[in-house]
Image 1 (tube, helix red, strand yellow):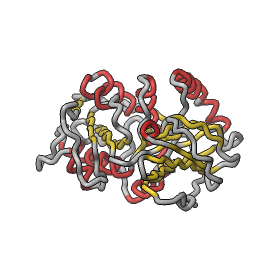
Image 2 (cartoon, rainbow, N blue to C red):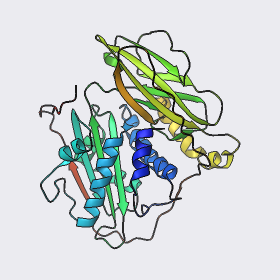
Image 3 (cartoon, helix red, strand yellow):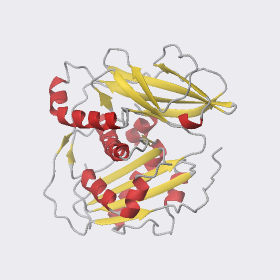
Image 4 (cartoon, rainbow, N blue to C red):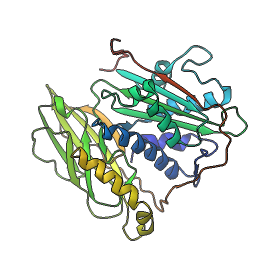
Length: 334
């Protein structure tokens, strides 16, 4: 699991539960909801043969803050009252981007509906299906006393020399120890190697975008790390996923069987699979891996999505699209 996102969620109250979800007010449930939203975006990208995106702490923080601003002000615009746009918000959050896009929506009952409307709108769809993005931020909030009642924000970005890996479309958890990892940056690398958990590194090998791994048996978080040789540097990225007990979660697995089968068919169409919760990406000089994540969470429960009887008042969309001719912005990211 992404510990950075977890820390952010632990210090940030998301306020009222989103209109489409009634869930226990816990960090774990909210984190799972974020990953559910990421999977929905990545399923849409996978259908078009595009690489999945990885949830990013800073993008989520910037997206969440602006979602709350939109709901309070009722002004669904990319520039805030001071004229500051997404580039200001993400750099303030510590995300120094190479590419950046933003989608906004308000008034939709749930994230699935907002995503559907984004995909039906040409500028929003262009953002969602841009092959150059690698990372994703999601923000959401609701308040019946406000004009739109719900607000949804989505940030898509890429940083120079940051190549995240994504396990199972950035899913929060898995029922199977067999996972498939997407490796950003593999196309431009000269060699790659990987390891599962604290195990031994594999031999250096020909880079490939899709990597199949077997997690150790045992409920809990398990990590996969990948190193890429690009020119004279070695880049490392790690991701984690929660392996669920097949006995404890038998009923949940049964309820989700239809979704799992649908996703499996999508994976097969692109000779891929996917899963994940990225930890961090960094440049290294030697093969020392990051210290193992000691955090463990118990008693995860299925998130129950229900639709509230809200009147849809003036559903609203906004998209900010980077022109293909626009030069890549540089904000100090090496």
